[in-house]
Length: 76
Image (cartoon, rainbow, N blue to C red):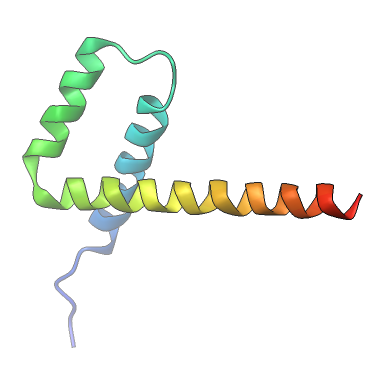
């Protein structure tokens, strides 16, 4: 059975979303970059989903790191 789902496109889209997330969370975001991000988001609904997934993953990583750091401090 052939899957019509393009795995490479998905991974490229995820990488784009992660790249945008990193840029937007930095202190060096220009108005041109914000406009480019808005354009990227408007291209396809899958872009906003990929970006939301990247944000969720990032938030989970931060929560895990904070929890681990808290546990280390508590044990000290």
